[in-house]
Length: 139
Image: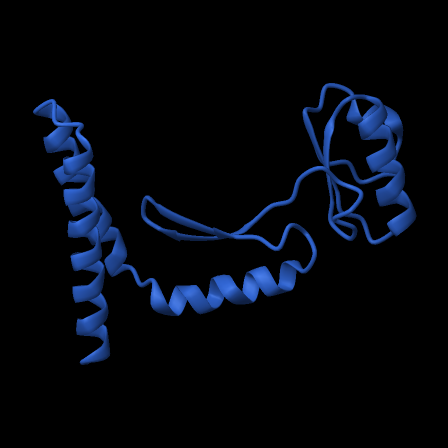
């Protein structure tokens, strides 16, 4: 729930997760204190030590999700690392994931869940990622 007014502890009623992200560190600390006393999870944007959770910078490539977190210590570094990874993990990785997911589904449908089959999938994943990077390096 978003409210454009002065904060009140009653704003937290019925909330499971609270994010304190105002431009006032004192208000953020008060929100965290109130959330804690009410048994709510809280993330404090300007002070990772006060909250109990933080949010990663997420890179999405279809169903592939890569999260980068600094545990709230330096969100800007997490964002920069995500942007760097975005130059390496291109949209083509979505196709690789789809291929691997189809192979996995085939193995599971056949009832093959052995360690050997997991190793086969890992080997295939490694090979496809390597080939993708080789094509990128040679272009």
